[in-house]
Image (tube, rainbow, N blue to C red; front, top):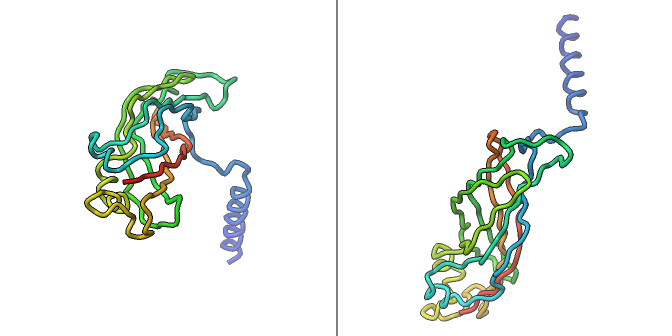
Length: 186
């Protein structure tokens, strides 16, 4: 019985000392950070009917993503280059409404060298899957042009955009979300 008590005491001490370790973050980004550094041509107001007439996609003219060494004074290697995999846009309401379009997710490609950046032109951030379902579809002329939930002829959406990639050594990395608001009208 005493032997079992000693084993349990040692196990408890191991758990306590391990839990007190100052480094609690166990993820390893491969020594790099992805960052959205700039974007141009972001729409701040948009007509749903004209977006659908123009091909059904809302785009950002140009967006840049940088690959920054987490330790700028440390060693770098080609294994820290990031292969871009995908991006996603999620939505929340900036007005009193609660209904949201579905998440917009797309695959993407390109390699961002450590210390460098990649630029994407005419990057879609919404498509027909978002424009043709409530709440945005309520703003279509044939649906009456008003949000059936709020009774308003405009919908303000917050968009949150982030990119995902993988270092050539196999570590997953992602950007901090870039957030912006678009006001949609009929």
